[in-house]
Image (cartoon, rainbow, N blue to C red):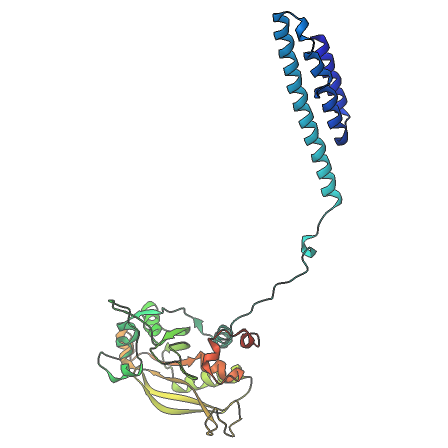
Length: 339
């Protein structure tokens, strides 16, 4: 029994200073077929039954202890090697990969909306989000377009199935929400998508974008509307452009006007885009109709205001020289990378 303990202590002492390459040799020396601990088992035949049990148990216990010590020593040495390697072989992951990912950027529509909105914000306007799903009341009736009115025929509407709701045909619907939720003075723009059941061609789409403008207060005049739009046009195109207002009709404004600017592509000389006239129609506007004020319980004798609607796609096409609206929605990377 003492011999087993001495042999085990001898093996454990060797393990203390052993290197990784030495460990296997130690295992063979003590636990191999001719190992020192294994050899003790060959002496069992000369022992009594009681001594055989004690000696066999002691040998097995010694083998287990030595095996555990060997595995622990292997793990200890491996951890030290790995730790040393990590200290000496640091990797800069910022330069580990030689390839780079292309950077994205805003779509031309998003960029145009931002550019247009930034100009109005600089003129003191707030930005309102609006709703894309509306009721008939907000999209039509409160805007002085009652049921069966001919004006509805110009806006072929998407109604949600078995529902009182519809996809808004104009950002003008937001005017009613804004005036219901706040009191004058109001000075706000509403960028967003609108929907009309139209065939897609070079100048039309069933989904497009508008920016609605609304100003309400006391003594608001048409001349203020003209001045605001002139400033906006000049800043957006980076030059002073001639502008003209033509009488028109919108059910929710009175008086109403359509606005033309001198063609930015030919300078007013006449081209294919302006159809030889030298002028381009760019937006509709007017003074808020008294019936719209009555729908939101504003006193039309006390308050006046103006509203305007800008087609984002039209301005994008003019600013960037695009002659087909479909290009804006086809997601052709060859086109998108240019902007």
